[in-house]
Length: 155
Image 1 (cartoon, rainbow, N blue to C red):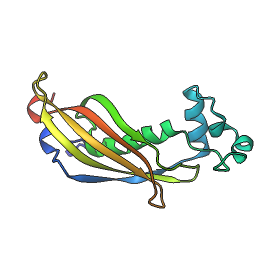
Image 2: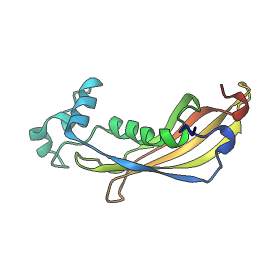
Image 3: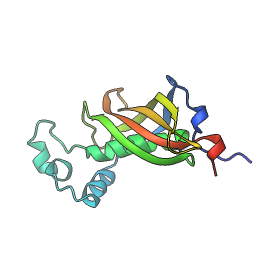
Image 4: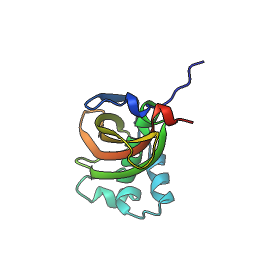
């Protein structure tokens, strides 16, 4: 029986790059639901008439949806069932907007891997995530630090 899972600590190799496919096409429902669920009343996400008067001329996809989906696209390939905890996100940037109808794809590069000094059987992995639109325009980047199981410590 083959069960899909993420990578154990020993399977992460510094410098390896992963393309996470398929991508995710953003719908208006995604943007409105995420924005309202998170109590973000920003008119740039919810009000098409207002957004039409602003520099981009249409509603922007909530950047937190973009970030969350960027990370989510990597889960099946990298951390499904092997993640102990997310430790942090740094260097988050949104160099270009994402709009309803755009398709977000993600790539991840392994930046560093080390055994945990305080948690035997686990290790710390730093991942550099990049998200692009269907036009290969970079729309989000983030560095993510995670705690993962080593093979020996896996339950």
